[in-house]
Image 1: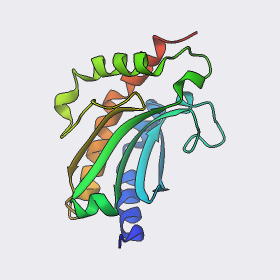
Image 2 (image 1 turned 180 degrees about the vertical axis):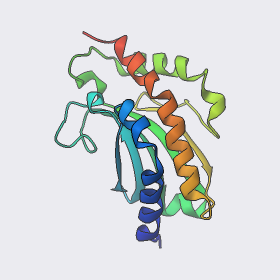
Image 3 (image 1 turned 45 degrees about the vertical axis):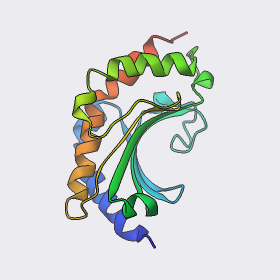
Length: 166
């Protein structure tokens, strides 16, 4: 059985280590919690959703997530991905999910080398997904590294969104 408290603490400590000035400059919000039986850290922008009240659980949204769950722990893996959900409904844009995903992935290909075990071979809801080895002694450090890595490419989402602005 997964020890949720243990991983929530690790993820929260990792979140606390992220450079707040850098995150603020990039307008990235952060959430640590439990979603779908996984402990998760999410990074997102308010502009990437229609729901200002609950952007973490909004129907229409884009976000980066790092997570573990019982299955990933058994496999000694920490997973990460970028999700783009129901973008057709994103206010101010005329987005076709497949075209958005293709455009993002074309730009992401240039950065792919910086991501371990990553793939873009998914439907349009998962722009990219990958994993790193779970080492509990350095999990916190690894989560910080993944989040920082995302912060360095978050502009790709904005750049792609700009192509679909109404």
